[in-house]
Length: 257
Image 1 (cartoon, rainbow, N blue to C red):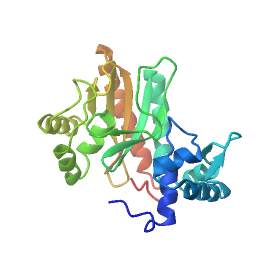
Image 2: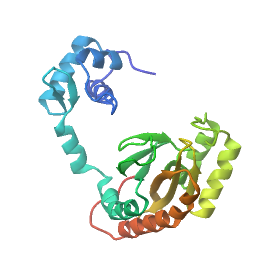
Image 3: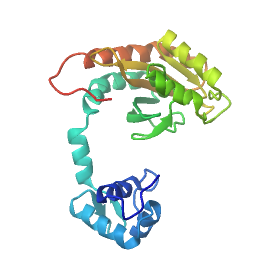
Image 4: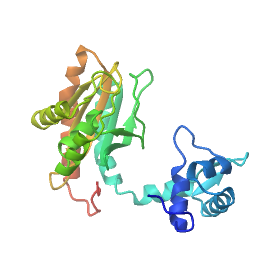
């Protein structure tokens, strides 16, 4: 339950302001920020001014507000996902050269898959995911890999919840999802024809960390046709390569994922 305004900390209010921005609407007026956060316009204006002064937000010439470069700098500098991305990127680039569509790297975040990186190409098949975008675990190839190898309590939580349906192919019942997760564990990859869009097919394989635990999923999104089977060994080989790269100690902290 949300705290009453007088009980909410300044940090919580600032966090709500930062969360108001999206890829679809990266620039907002102060009034729009106030409406989205539920803050009084005067409060939103004051906090926005302080965040701008610290470089966490910036203002356009028309006074619209955006996420600031300073915030991006701090996130990138200290991101626990950087070692994972650095290890996977050469293998993702190799896969992209072969498939010519979308190659993605996703990690588990709560009950969703969060995409850290994506390589694409002009005229590639339709794909709803973006860098820093999210999808439900049950609906995407990356999400199914992460859920299949995730904590047991998370599996039961997802199985007991409402399963969003994107197409007729999306797993929409707990019984079907249980079977799908068992297949992913047995096969070592997820194969998802038309789960999110009827014209697209996802293939994902697990990326493992130093201790052998699954820390990410490397996936491709290609046209949903008979030729998609050919990308399975390519994706699995790339995921194993990224896993080997992660298994070499670097002296830096782990991914934390």
